[in-house]
Length: 592
Image (cartoon, helix red, strand yellow):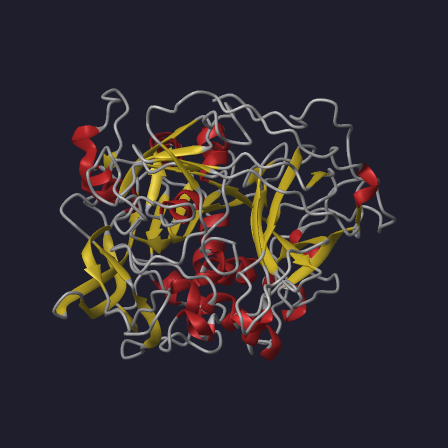
């Protein structure tokens, strides 16, 4: 695929004068001596607020969040909308970096020794956010040296009434960027702050009623050039208005020119598949009927629009934040990549020692799946600390004419899902992956969703106990964990369960798991934690549950069943797994 260009807007100079900072730090470290396993109270509270705001629905769709109004255009109005005339482009003095901008980036261990903050979190109470902000970025996967454009829209929340005054539109915005990690239990580090910025009146986003696609073509609010000294990671962009409104977006910075020995894959395609902002998602329950499907389920979604979750950071704060905190707490030499990064550069998967897939990893492009399969066949170990993995195949396409990133690759996600017979691209169809990916991961989602709690708004699910398999094999996985044959790890088995199937590799062993009721009707379901060795010698592990992350670092708002502190036994087991897969030399499996 064509690599994304930086600095796309004509006439815009390179931005971001370097700020004074520490000199480049030394070589990356694999892991450091762990701090105590007690969760930092302030961060646990922050994550409880953040996940309560995430608003992620289940695979069945759930109740969509209110969608801010977009202007619908009929399918016949397909002409290129001219770019609206906007204000002068943002200038370099509009922001300053608060970290070093020159030299080599620090290692993960060194970066996390820096002072942290919990100011990245957003409150959830509506009374805390008068006015309204919407926010998105030009690319959710970027490389050092590229330019990230931030788009913001400020609107009042209500009209004046006889008894209440209208909330005023913001007159100034301040943008801050935080890097997410451990940072002594604070969870994030402030790396950039802007000057007060004047909000721009943004044009309506365009909604295609034929496919359900919503694309925004807003004027830039701020452009930042990403310096080479910035470490790989998940970055949260937070906008605050003088009226009190707050909003977030996220992007992932890859490591260049090579990924770290541990490459963590975050499925932003799954984030967007659930995103109803502007009208429709890839699930039923959209604002209106979609022409292609004849239902309220869309077949195209765009990265070029805000997220409809309360925070604006997709599903990151629902679970995946826990894995990022865990990896960085223990100093793993990790770098990060997303759906779009791996789709554009699939050969990246052939470089690390270990590929780690995390969270709700339901939607993959064919180049992503092929990249993982090819890496396994080259002896690269893999760990899927995820579930519902590889359920749906999607196709990435360039942004459409109504997008701020028009014609740039991998900005539209096309997924016909159950309506695959209607997909016009017969050469590269979307739809389900064969056997739900079991031939690669060792397990597959077979339809079990654990019960949903009857609470308004976002979807909240029950989680149950996970148990090791009898015999505690393989011994290296369970060594020094404190787990016994009768042990149970509460609150990590749930939401969507994967299990070994007939399509799993023949050598696939079940090393743990458990049972849980499934919707509808509370029929019994099973989650299998699996392990197999490929012919290449690569070891492949799959957790089989969405809750594995929740036992490593607390995300209290994920579920009332979720652990309130890290489970030291699961932490030890996961560290055994990662350490083994990072250091073991692949040995070809015996032929059978």
